[in-house]
Image 1 (cartoon, rainbow, N blue to C red):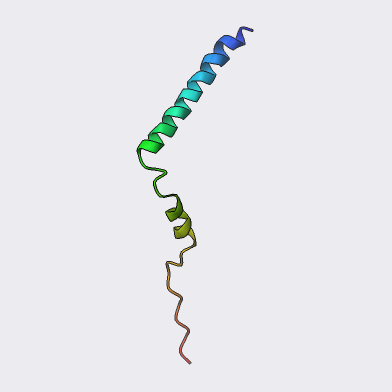
Image 2 (cartoon, helix red, strand yellow):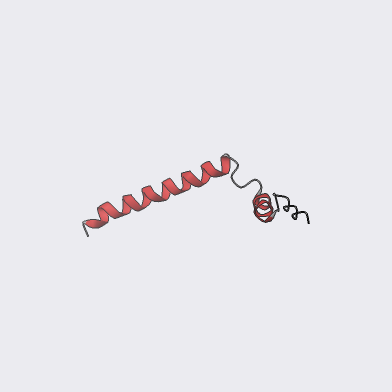
Length: 54
């Protein structure tokens, strides 16, 4: 049971760090454009190479 004295504050501290990280990511705009990254991943940015002349 002595280990609970260490584990409970450690779990609460890690939960608080995770919550603060999530709130920071909301404030910095990480979730503003959810669809843009998906479309950029499949967009064809480079033009097709020209076929060699015959």
